Image 1 (cartoon, rainbow, N blue to C red):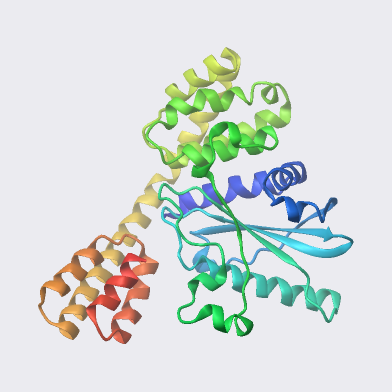
Image 2: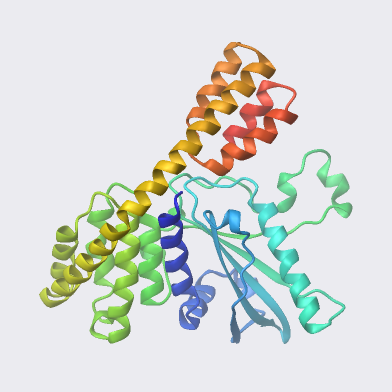
Length: 336
């Protein structure tokens, strides 16, 4: 995922869920009932901290909320995975972020006991999420017998593909964002937009609603290539009003002009990235052939390597090739 896409996901997510009303409504509708029964939502505070490492910002965004659990301060950690494929190792990412939150909490409050953290995960990729929610599901061996010696937790999963459009609840803005997140990778996205924008009809009459349109337009134009500003104007005019369609068109032209100005720089950056990617692929092909020979299995690995477009994954594969003792180990890493 390139920086433009990452920035669009991150910006819209944080703009939406750093709003206290949106955050509260989301928690009211989607926290498990037993958790909600002990959470004092009136105590909800938006924390400014982020726990995502720089090299993972292409894949995740996060929000941290402070709340009381029956009078005891604790946290709800909200992680948004915006990769195009599910991460089977997300448990490790969550555990690392929870450790960071605990260390920060201990440092700030000088307490000797750890606060409760409820990890939430929002996913909207086109592939179905199949990983189990418990950390212990990642472990191999006699887990049941050894459970007293194994740290464990569960995250609360919100895979938007599992919800019908009518089941998506919350404030108007949060519902619109979740519906756009849900459908953004689908071929019928343009057909879904009129129904989604109908929700914004009342909000569009307010100044804050108009400001929110700019964020939505930037996100849509950053992620959908087969919808033009003119099509977008027609959708908005038919859904809201003609003057709103004109306003959207003006804004779309402005955004398109900004895109033109950035085009040359992005083109150069893209060319450089493609060169780096090609060099990495050729180096990995050579390393695999030298280590494992010219076998059919090696040819399979090389074919899979050529299909990888993520530079970070290609870089990580260099170390795996060095440590792997068999070709199936390489294949397992590439397919995960």
